[in-house]
Image 1 (tube, rainbow, N blue to C red):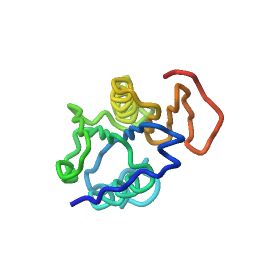
Image 2 (tube, rainbow, N blue to C red; image 1 turned 90 degrees about the vertical axis):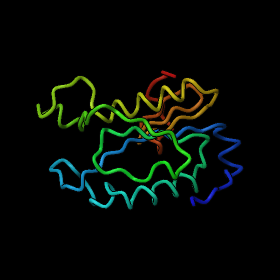
Image 3 (cartoon, helix red, strand yellow; image 1 turned 180 degrees about the vertical axis):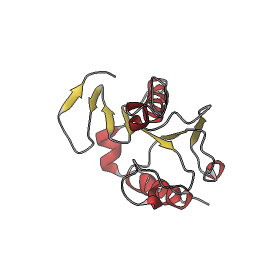
Length: 152
């Protein structure tokens, strides 16, 4: 059972409704482009990540885009939207170095999937990895207050 958290008053007043979008890929192997601990690309980490998202943001919706991962968390036990892509579209570096021939990487498809859920809902904040759309302005880094674009 996943614990439920109350949204902090600060988040509710400052951010309004919130959607968190993220991607999922896990095959249990090491990759030459991977940075940081392999634990962050494991099923065990998903639960830690989810609990932290809920504790800090308690979003109205969590949207996970899975890149046809062979190893998945028990996503049906979480109150999330799980989107399955038809295949692994790779990391942006895979496209850059020619390992995968496609226009959009898995990361880009994750952002687009989450943003589409954001666009279909009367909410004011969408967060995906390091991109935040808040009240119509995109910030390229969640720690930044400098708008990158006025896309949404």
